[in-house]
Image (cartoon, rainbow, N blue to C red):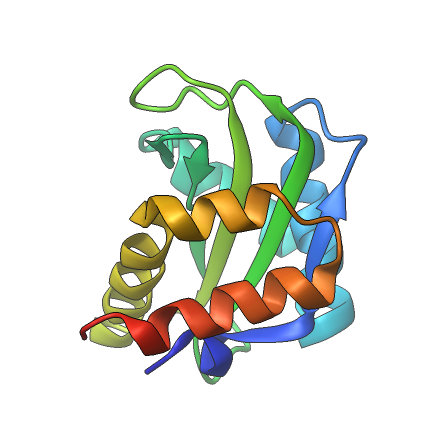
Length: 154
């Protein structure tokens, strides 16, 4: 499994208008609808439900919201880089500007966990995050995300 199998280029965006989790989750759901044909209301509800179990802000400006949904046959992702960091109740209390959301089938089991681990390892890499923060072009962001795993050990 690599990030290019989870993430389509059209699912990578830069956003300037996001100031709340609610707005962020709506944007993630809208992108997931346009790229993966996921039902937006169900997607937002699933993200909020998961977030109510504990914040998915993992620190260093990164959040990894995730949810299990009906109608998926594999794990898929959406990446948003925010132009202005926002509060996300992250574990280190720092604002978040890099969001990599994962959506998995209801019964995905270990595939969901493997995908989450892969994304987590990628987003823990300081050099990768620095490249993501210094680029505004979605195609470049996609290239940074998908190339970063090929140079790291599995």
